[in-house]
Length: 446
Image (cartoon, rainbow, N blue to C red):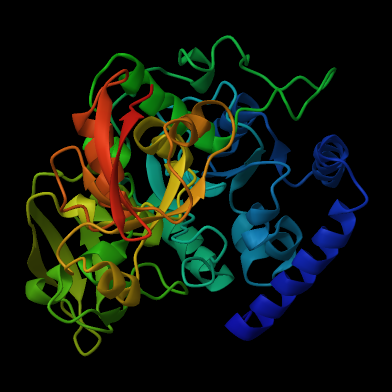
């Protein structure tokens, strides 16, 4: 079994090799070389979901669908070669029909719903489209070690095989498929339909023909914003990380608690370190991503989730209730997500904000419970230069947005702007610049 230390070492080696290769290859060359390598190897079906479903139907094996943008150095989290040759994973993979999907062009969004701020995701499902589970989590722009691992993937694959072999559990899997989205595939969204088709263009510029994962989320948010509608909270705060409940999970297990934050939602519910969360809201859990799916579907206004928990010192699971307070999703952190790029265009005119330090607050005489968001970066081009044109400067500290001064984080300000303002509206923003307060008019954008 691959240990965390040896797995990390292998990944570092792969990343080093990839970075050297990247310096010698263009993005187009990397895409074409990846296609040639996967097709010549013959183990993974390459970018052909209909063929994979037909093979699963013929053989009775479950499907493993890997969504991985190409080329994307961040996707080397579980490198293909490392996964395919691991002595524990390979025998498990051979029990699946494995298909590699390298773009979202034409992807069935009624079935394949996942965190589009990821660039790597896996689905384990049956030929009849019953989803057994998801795998692939990230809570930082570049770091991933605390969220995914090879041992964790092995556990998820075993769990999916167990579910596949037990048709009596199919009813518990119904909730793993979401409600239909606004459009059934990415290229049908208004902001994408004139730029992309439902397939990659290998005859031309294949890289520019690819719809990346994050573009789906961008297109969904743009769809609501362009109509002057609030962005739904489950789209704005999508796929909350379990840390929002105070849970730190072991990435080497399916859903085993590593630690619990004091006074958190999880601790209040009675969850303890070492507990294995077997089901959440009735759904069996194969990974951290499965927990995120349940949280994504949960009511943003609060409510209750039933969890079946097996303690480390017990052989009998117990059912506990997790109480979600109103607006609990807004405790999540959006700062690492690629989606903040579009939100900053809409709400802050391209400003990237950070919380002022205690020293800066003291110097500017701003109380701890009042707004103090420092301008870290001012966008320079196009719609992301709206704040620049309005007079904002790097180093400004925003102390009031409209008539409110209680936004303590950039996330809370972006959430307010995305749900409570409309394109074309101008918001009076007060900034503290070198100890002097200045009012600037910031345009809200589509």
